[in-house]
Length: 187
Image 1 (cartoon, rainbow, N blue to C red):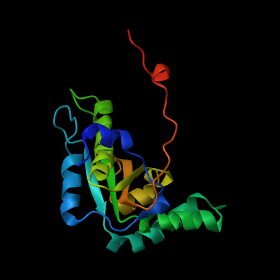
Image 2: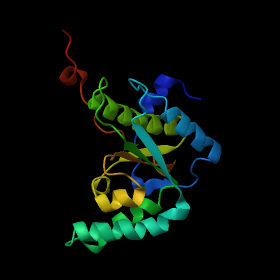
Image 3: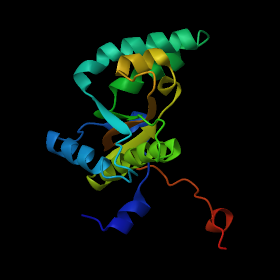
């Protein structure tokens, strides 16, 4: 296995259409979920949960997602509709991370939300460590109540990320990264 620093320096998000089979095995899925849950969680509230979207259910989900998209975007072109149709069917594995952050006497809601973001990042990182590509998305459907209902996301929950995992078909060029001088201040 690649050492941790090299692994982190090399991580990139593949383009969604480039994600192919094979996806993680059942044992690797358990590793992904176990490592994803090892995040900072002030107060041990577990203010998040994960939803695994098996391929066997995605065809029916695709229809609802497309209906929701058409309703929200009545001027959508056939290409845009096809892109939304492909969103749920192409990736070998999809895991939705749901934030359950809420009011608490001692733990600020913001810290709970950040913990859900850490779950998303752990999923992306461990997928890379296992040799897969992973892409963390949200998009319109994370904010659409009909899509949230489809995923079983309750009215007090929010989708923190929809993580697509599979074998990256092409190595993506690294994007420009911020210069440390522009983002780091030393006091």
